[in-house]
Length: 206
Figure: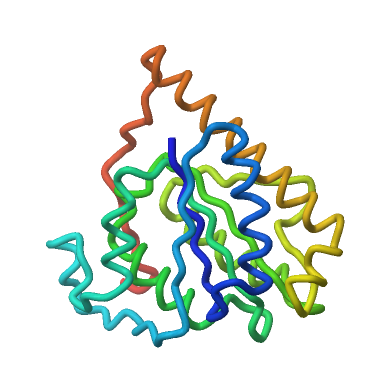
């Protein structure tokens, strides 16, 4: 079992990283393989709606998004972390997730998803909701914690002093590990993901 934790902050080892590593530590203690995937400080192009990925499964812009997509088939759970920018996820992570998820719901169905956000003061719940919407449209079970998955602080040191926030990260890690083990146990007994119906798309204007 493996979880990829995506750091959507331009700072490789800042506040968001501090939160993600607390989740990662607990996952590893539970025997789960992990990888932190850094989106980085370079610009991430937004989706241009060309539709090419619907046929190839890869984005026509061959960058870090395709590197991430190559990891998805062998990954069982994802944690997407972001700093809060204007009560939303970072622009880089938003562009990244738009392209990583668009037309690729089949890659994520049944895999676990969790959002983690880091802010100095406010806007965390709005950014948290934004990231979770990617999971719900792809039939991904969302992993929760004892509170919304957020930490507060302006530096990694301040984040580590957010005792409730760090405990929330540890609880998230334990809950994700537990759910992964439950899914694996079910699969061993022959319980499979529902096939579902062919999608029906209804436009509002006729």
